[in-house]
Amino acid sequence: MKVLKGRDLLSLADLSTEEIQQLLQLATQLKAGQVHLHCNKRLGLLFYKASTRTRVSFSVAMYQLGGQVIDLNPNVTQVGRGEPVIDTARVLDRYLDILAIRTFDQNQLETFAEYAQIPIINALTDLEHPCQVLADFLTVEENFGSLAGLTLTYLGDGNNVAHSLLLGCALMGMNIRVATPLAYQPDPRIVERAKQITAGRTEVMLTDDPIAAVKDAHVLYTDVWASMGQEDSASTRIPVFQPYQVNEQLLTNADSEAIVLHCLPAHRGEEITNEVMEGARSRIWDQAENRMHAQKALLVSLLGTD
Ligand code: CP
Ligand code: NVA
Image 1 (cartoon, rainbow, N blue to C red):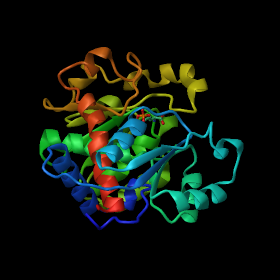
Image 2: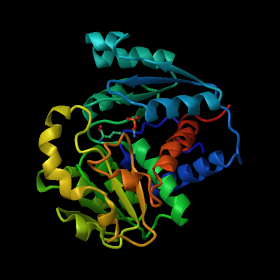
Image 3: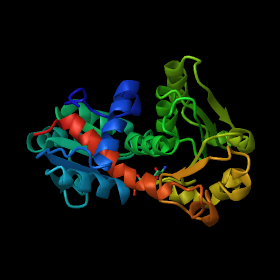
Image 4: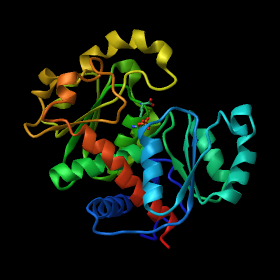
């Protein structure tokens, strides 16, 4: 797929509906071993936050394509000592073919993209997690055959994962319901953008009522109540978020074929029960595996093959 070559992926809304469909189709073919692609390029990983899945799935995807990965751990590079982003970006641009960044501030990611010519991938910011949602959609498509017309309910904190789901569901013709405590609703700018994209064709619902949100939903999705960088507020969040826990009782309100997703890492007994995580409705391990297939499709699409 040449169509994305050289582009950045800073937000899921940087992709069109057709581009997401093509990425999912390519990811499916790669996963099934129907296509074998080669891309001898160099991927840099610049992660200011911890990561297991994103780090390993990007690395393995690149190695399987025949490329190389360089871990730019801020603890051992000059970025951790405060070298300006505008300098780092221009230097890394001279060595690497593509750079995946995990950081706090979306503006910092955008500065990297402004000063580096190579494609910059958002590997999670406080605002968005677009690579996660590509894998989520691959998982939903595997289970239901297609995406359009399905209802996805997200329960928890209205931050990065919820934001990319809002934009992604709007792009893919899915209904999205976001159930959060009122003080933790998604960023109104993201909600507005999702509404603009769907232009009334599908539902974009915000609510503080978890049971209404889950009614007849096909996908229940949750994430930690205290994200990376918010650990200090974890204990005050637990009682506020308790009604939004994904448990067997809540699941009875969903569609009888509903599946449960979680981006991981999970706090069992908080946002999701052990029973649901290990239960028949969980597709969480397929979802984690799909990070690798979706990102391999993304890397090939941004870099081209050789
Ligand atoms: N879901 C996800 O991004 O996991 P990591 O934080 O382990 O990369
Ligand atoms: N919302 C979580 C997602 C982790 C993949 C966080 O930002 O920590």
